[in-house]
Amino acid sequence: MEAIEVSRRVWERLLAIRDGASCACCGSFSAPERAALQVYGPIARRDLRPITVAQVGQSLDGRIATASGDARDVSGPDGLAHLHRLRALVDGVVIGVRTALHDNPRLTVRLCDGSNPARIVIDPRGRLPDDAPVLTNCGARRIIVQAVDRPRPAGVEVLPLSADDGRLDPRQILEGLRGMGIGHLLIEGGGLTITGFLEAGLLDLLQVSVAPLIIGSGPQGLTTRTEVQTLSQAYRPQTRIFGLGSDIVFDCALGAQAIAAQEPVHRQGHSAAC
Image (spheres, rainbow, N blue to C red):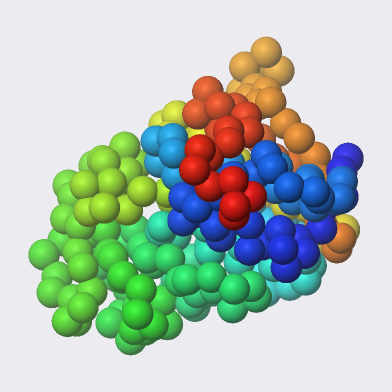
């Protein structure tokens, strides 16, 4: 396991990579700083096709909340900072309507420098109220994916899709968002939403952040609809492990895109920034 250090110069480099003005391979960095570039560099890059990453923050026993739904402090302070860095590096953050209704998230970037991503809620039946915190105007795009004909407030965009038994197809969601100009995506929650994209084969990268606590009951981070009968059927992604401080993150590459993004590529013409 490698410890990471997101120093100011590392974060400035990552934001420059996001803007296409630098690379992760050049410069003199400490080993923990290099590890940070390895964690976030593949998500910051814009020279490959858009990447879809999911992040799960959970306890040692795989819980993302208590039985009553309390999920506020599952991740430690470094795990929360990690989540905000991911938000700052992607173009849009996706959550399901249950998460929006229960957790009242803002999905903004507050624990690091960076721009707020587009905030996207998957809401097939149009249950999300117009005054939900996630729809507050912070200058970033607000998008609702829904299957009903429900008007939304001015400034809130709607991606209309057809539902099958009350569910929206993750592939259609992804294609629709890309058609709206949303490239790199973070699937932030909840567990059912993340699992839907995982089972559809749409995740390039899965980051599981584990905090040192045992909850004992409550919802689990990932539960697939298809039961695994033998371990030979289990997902076995190429995985790297990093220490965040208060939490540990398992960085899981689920396809060739994520593996390719881990390979350092020097940006020609940007040597001064490197």
